[in-house]
Amino acid sequence: MSATGFSSTCFNRSCSWKVEKLSKSKKQHEGKPFVKCSMRSSDRTSQSTVRIGVLGASGYTGAEVLRLLANHPQFEVTLMTAVRKAGEPIASVFPHLATQNLPDLIAIEDANFSDVDAVFCCLPHGTTQEIIKGLPMHLKIVDLSADFRLRDISEYEEWYGKPHKAPDLQKEAVYGLTEISREEIKNARLVANPGCYPTSIQLPLVPLIKANLIEAKNIIIDAKSGVSGAGRSPKENLLYTEVAEGINSYGVTRHRHVPETEQGLSDAARSRVTISFTPHLIPMSRGMQSTIYVEMAPGASIEDLHQRLGQFYKDEEFVILLENGVIPRTHSVRGSNYCLINVFPDRIPGRAIIISVIDNLVKGASGQALQNLNAMMGFPENTGLQYQPLFP
Image (cartoon, rainbow, N blue to C red; front, side, top):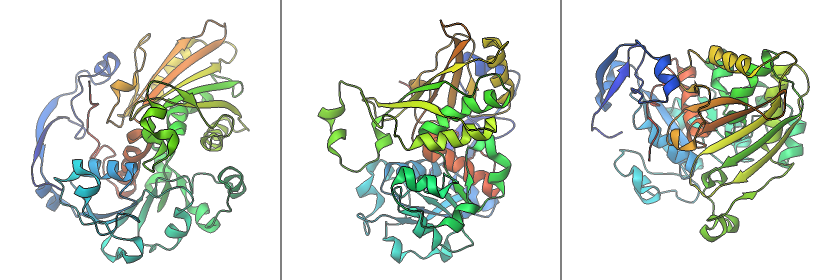
C-alpha cells in the first residue's frame, strides 16, 4: 500500500464516504452527524494485519481487488500469482497500480501460503476447484469464479461442461450474496462469490419473493453488461470494431448465470423457480443493468413492493432504493460497491418493472468479494469500500 495518506468524510457508524447522493439516500442518512477522519497505511498497526493472497492478479477482477485493497487499513497483499505474467511487477501489467507497494507476480506453484491468512481467488471458471482443494486449511477463501456457486454438482456439470473436481469442498462452500446470507458468510471458510448478473437480479427479487408480493413464475429479465464482464483474454468478438457502436445478445437461453440465479430465487420461494433471462453486451467498459418484469401477487401494489424493498434494505449501506419515479443509471454506480434499485408500474395491469444497476466489477465481483472477506474476518463490511461512484 502507498504510504500516502488520504482523507475522507465519514458517517459516525463507520468509515463511509459522505454521499452527495441520490435523493432517497439523503433521506436515509438525514440527521446522522459527519466527522472528518484520515486513514494512512501506518494505521495497520492499530490492529493485527491480515495477509492477503490474490490468485489470478493479472485479470480484471484481480486488478479490481488490488485497487480496493489500496484503501483497506488492515489487509496487506503479500502474495500475487499470474500464469502468463509470472516474474513481472504489477506496474507492467496494470500501470494504474504502479504507485502501490506490491510484491511481484509469481506462478501459483511457487506460492508460499505460510505467509498468507486469506485468499481472493480470481482465476477463470473451471480452474479453481483443484487449486482451492490444495490450499492450506488455515486460509479464509473468497472464490470469484463460478466453481463453487452451484450446490448441485450435477447441475454444475450440465452448465459448465465438466465434472466437479471438489465435491466434498462444495458441501462446505457458502454462497456469498452478502446482504442475504450475512450470518452464514461470517462463519465460513470458503465463500463462493456471486456472479454479476445474479447479484443484480437477486438483490431486488429475493425480498419480494420471500414476502409473497410477486409471483415466482413468468419472471422475465433483460440484462445488459459492459465488456469487462467477459474478462481480459483476447477474443475476436470483444475487439473494438466488433463491440463499438452496437449491442448484441449472447448466451440466449443457455447463459451460465441462469442456474445460479434460479438457485437463489428457488431458495427464497421454497419451490422451483424458472426464469426467462437474456443478457446483452453493451459498448462500455463497466456497468450492468437488469430490467426485470414480474407479475405481482393478487392484491399487491407497486407501493407494497417499494415499501418492502425500503424496509428490507433500510440499514444496508450498499443497496439503495431510489425515490418513486427515479430511474437507476449505471453512471451512478461506476467504480463503487452500490446497487441502485427502483420499481415501476407496467402498462399491463398486475405487472411491475424492476430496474437494478451495479458496477459489474465491484458489487458484481471484487467489491462484494471484499465485503464478504471483511465479514469473514470480523471487520466492518464497508472497510476499503468507501469509494463513491465516479462521474462523469
